[in-house]
Length: 222
Length: 222
Image 1 (tube, rainbow over the protein chains, first blue to last red):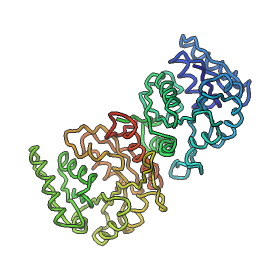
Image 2 (image 1 turned 30 degrees about the horizontal axis):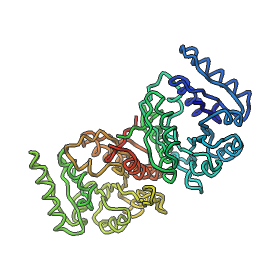
Image 3 (image 1 turned 30 degrees about the vertical axis):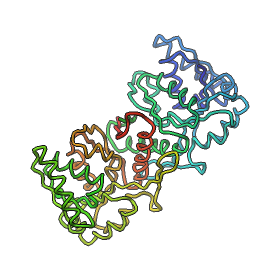
Image 4 (image 1 turned 135 degrees about the vertical axis):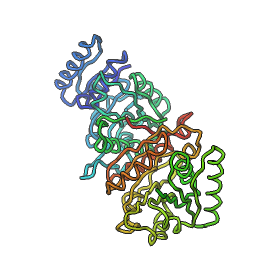
């Protein structure tokens, strides 16, 4: 499968790119608004994988070109860039493509991080609003600590929550998630339930801030 | 330590009463608006513990009488009864007592459960507003599946999140939590962070609804 990571030069994009390239045979296309930056990052990731003896399949491309080549497009950008980013690639999203939204809107105060719920109800709902009607949107990968994900020496052994209204798309993204060793996909229902999923991310940051040894904390449901 | 469970005849109250009586030597006072109902439930819990060979220390009392006897008072009532319940016992709360709030405001729609954030910012903040100024308020035990908690044959092996602005009170409640076998207390910071903690409860319910074998799902952070 061909996976585009829009904003794939950022921290969560880096982690997903490295993990998919390391643990699976999918093609990863690192997207950026700047094609040269995308190429450089793709080369950097490929070098890291090569050093581990993995012959990876990673390219760089400008976001729209990356989206054009992919079956699954992950909008790995901050919440405040999400709508612009999705609209910029909308013409390249085909019927049957899946758009994945891992972004969470947060605000920080002196006590910690807080969920900043968008008017649309959730960031995933924002993504669904910005995407063409024939593109299924799935929320996933919100609750993964970026450093732990990008560190291929770190055992993950964590869950990621999946929300979506299109069963096939949810199945596709769940399978992509579970292709990563130590990552389990757990369904949280439809996009109407995305706010509770996104709200877990500031909670994890608050836990990391308040407990020793929990810097890159993840979650397991059981 | 003497622990009062206001609304201790309800499902989360039952679980906490049984667990503390089973795993610790604390005195548990089951509170209810109706003293006779409290007595009956206390007797029912004591009978169950006796059948397991545990000589428990459980009494029943009307809520205010229960609060008067306790060092730690747990408001194990639904969110919409919280303010009334706390105000009804306020005269019995002494300087140095700790009030614990496990309640979560939720609303259900056709997709699942959603966090219903009170105007005060969180249910824990509501409790803090209703309590006398010299009583420390701690949010805890929101994210425990009541049936799993009340089933003394079930291994817990889960975490509960603790929020509070008074360090001593947080320490007291964390120690009470960890007195229960298989329960770990994890700090999420101050009461300003309580909304993200309370929002985990509807998420757990949505996970239970959408995944086989996760009926009484709990959470571990690591």
